Image 1: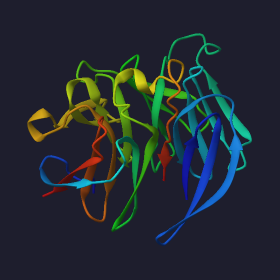
Image 2: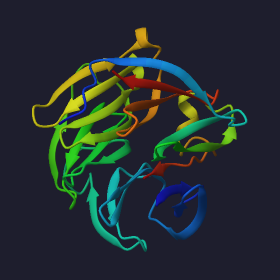
Image 3: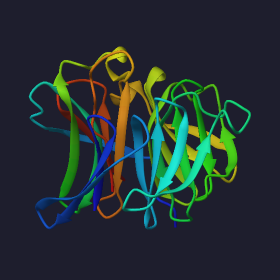
Image 4: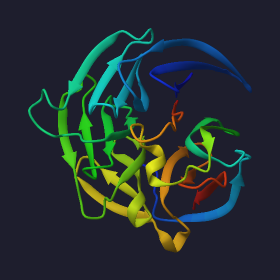
Length: 64
Length: 194
């Protein structure tokens, strides 16, 4: 049985203290745990910031 | 086990034991990695320094390579996030071509999916063998791709609070979808299946 995504109800946001850095990736670890990775540098939400060849912003990625 | 990419050209394995995280093996890779995913006992990575994909063993040995230019085409221009499905397929979002490409575990291209609704795709996850969820950043949507039919439909949009979606994950046990917007607030949006 495939999960149905036709009805999704928004719940309260989760807030992570990232010290002004962008969350780069997220994964489910267990029923009650999420794992997130964040960028190294602050304030880099712009499009250019994730271009490896145009800035020194190197980011972390995550896979489970 | 989790795998993260580190500053520079390396991967770091992280062992997850309950609530504790412990550093495992790390090793160098062949370029600037963007996407990373587990594929059975291997790791699939995408490079942005050159539009390649590679399958690596857990000790960093290169098992398979997909070199876009050597393949004589431009399948990838900026391969970004990677998802692997339970049936062993690999899905890669490309932010420049606005496509999702399906490959087998040996990195042979099976099919490329495109649709006007797919705009600047980023995070991608595999929910089942025929359900891939994709962040479509430029039109503020979360899309559902059904690989068997090629159908791509919107399941969440701006009216649901989606804005520049960047990454996502899904908990089958909680039936919750988590969406990370492209911002520095540290906010994670939560959506419950009814």
